[in-house]
Length: 69
Image (cartoon, rainbow, N blue to C red; front, side, top):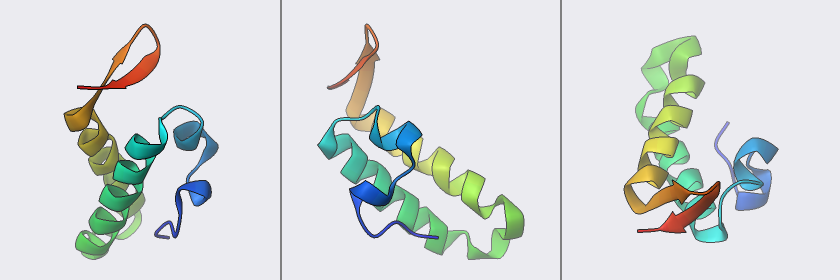
């Protein structure tokens, strides 16, 4: 279930992140989705965790707002 565009991301992601961070999330999710194809039902959860980790390498949350480091 890779995401074709940022607009396809879940509301819980798309509504919280700045556009650039959402693009990072989408790219990381799609790469993890392909990389962890052998993980069965755990695949989606792993891909979401990888995607959040990628966002957190470039952005941090301050006062409820995601800002670029």
